[in-house]
Figure (cartoon, helix red, strand yellow):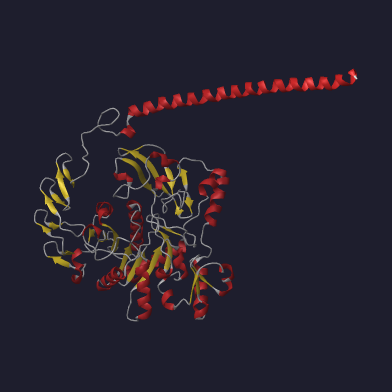
Length: 545
């Protein structure tokens, strides 16, 4: 029981209180609990999944009998070596990949007692938001009826305050005179949760947000399923309330429950995109299904902006399940079709996204954010935003703004950036980062302008890189086919060393116990003699007198 409390005694990020410090780094899901010792924590440099590496951990996905943490059902992982399973399978939190946020961990074959299960359920209940979505809707209705001087927002608790609650927040910082315009733009009122792999609320800049909305309208869509895009959702809601002719509607699916204070149950669903979990249960799932099935499933598009450090495989699984909900409309031909989608993600995840969605293609449009130090519009070279739009729509229908330097390539039949020149050998515009790439004859592909072909590595890389010889074997035995961490000779050596270490640990313990006993006896005997002599002296003195 004490071990369970030690493991599960961390606060969940679902709390509405303002974080005390900004989280700037994040560990991988396997850095939770015992698997942390398997290797250095963190993500691979580019890819989002360890399954693609020679060794690490693989995501096995969501299983029906998975245990739950405050963020919904946990995901199943396993340690891998050379593409093969090695070690015990374990469950870890789907959303939080840092033990500071949620350190849930359980072995797959672990037998959990009824006492621990009851304690875990109580822990999950205690880490839910203080108000339900329906209660927040009622509070909002009462809040908008208040006069402007009585409208307050607690910055410490990130909560709209009613007059009866002022006394509880008297020592907190709060904003006064909350206008209707501020209520229509909650992303500017709330503090962004900038955890890169859980929330990552890097909010769209007005330029990118307006471009996405104009593009959606020009393509004829009338409903937008906004998955993790609160800024786009609020722009649609705000324009719909101000402009009567705007017929676009939006449903926001987001893990940040704070938005339930501003939107009704038909406008917002508390949703975890890493395990396709609706916190509102079947009612919220039905709300999403009805939204997708309106107008027989036509003229609806999904726009998602997941955390850049999230597992691509877990995200793809959830997005496919949302597409499956869209196919339930019963429309003829929907069984094999994909729901139109904009997946906003860095360009270096292209291979991973295409692995799960082969029909997708990447657009050259650079998406920028308001609260990100690097992903800004107007920067050039390597400093420009690497975030792009992946879509299953025909590239030729995605019209990019010419005034921002984009042009239409007649050969590729799509809009590209001005620096993305068409390669006649590759027969495509190959640049990914906006710079003009060069073709390498030996690699048979275009590479970045700062890369040069290395004969030792047999590929293109930076000029001052460290060569990695592909024919180098294990550092322990010298044989090829495995690394030092998985060397059989090293495992035998470790076994022998561990046995010797245990023997050395036992011997000093016995010696220490023997020394302690002898020392105790040595000190006890003189003490007893001294007491006896004192007693004799006390007895004989009266006789002499």
